[in-house]
Image 1 (cartoon, rainbow, N blue to C red):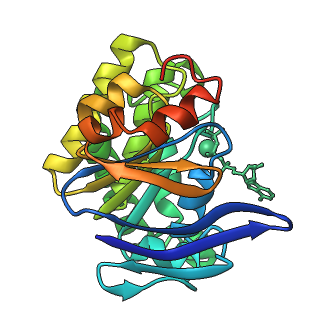
Image 2 (cartoon, protein in one colour):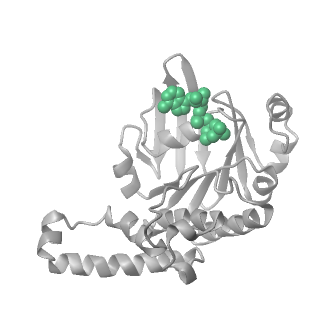
Length: 254
Ligand SMILES: Nc1ncnc2c1ncn2[C@@H]1O[C@H](COP(=O)(O)OP(=O)(O)OP(=O)(O)O)[C@@H](O)[C@H]1O
Ligand SMILES: [Mg+2]
C-alpha cells in the first residue's frame, strides 16, 4: 500500500524523522509505536502531505507522492484522523459530516447563490453519504444530537466517519484510543478491524500497548525519529532495543 524509503524530516537542528525505511501492508493493521516525541505524528504529516520531507521517497500504491500536497494525496485515497478531533460543537453530528464532505464537492459560491440544480443534487448526495458513514461507525442513532453533547468515544467515531466518508483505501489514525477507558478502547479496536474487513488498510499510532498487541498485524517502533524495530507483536514484545527505549521513557503501561 505504502513504500517509504529513507524518509527524513529535520526541523532546524532537530531530526524528527531520521532515515526511515518501511512499508504499510495492504489489508492489514499496521501500527506505529514509540515514546512521546519519537516522530510518529511527524511521520503521518509527511505521508499525508501536510509537511514536506527533507529527503526520502513515499510511494502510495506504486505512485510517487513525495512532493504532492495534502489535498491531492487525499484524492488518491488517503484519509487521516488527528490526535484531537475538532468538531463544530454548535452543529449536529450529521451536519459535521456534511460540512466535512462539502469541502470536497464541486459546487461553488455561484451555485449557492443561484441555488442551482447541481447544488441541490450535491446536498442530497452529501446527506446520504453522511448518513451512510454515520451508520458504518455506529452513530446513526445520534445523528441529530449537537456535537457539544456527545461522549469522547462518540467524538472519536465522528472522526472515523469523516475519514470513512472520503472512501479511502488507506486510513492513518493518530491515537484513536487516546483518552478512552478500557471498554471504549475495546469498542474502537473493533471499529478499526471493521475498516480493514471493508477493504480499508489501516496505519495507526497508539500508546495503549494491550490494544496494539491485540489488533496489530505488524508494528514499527520509532525512537528519536529512527526505526529501531519492526515485526509482529510477538517479535516486538521481546525485542531488547524496544524494551530499552520504553524503559528509558515514562511509559509505565509499556
Ligand atoms: N512543526 C514542527 N516544528 C518544529 N518541531 C516539531 C514540529 N513538529 C514536531 N516537532 C518536533 O518533532 C519531534 C517529534 O514530534 P512528534 O509530534 O512527531 O512526536 P510523536 O511521536 O507524535 O509524540 P506524541 O506521542 O507525544 O504524540 C518533537 O521533538 C517535536 O517537538
Ligand atoms: Mg503524536
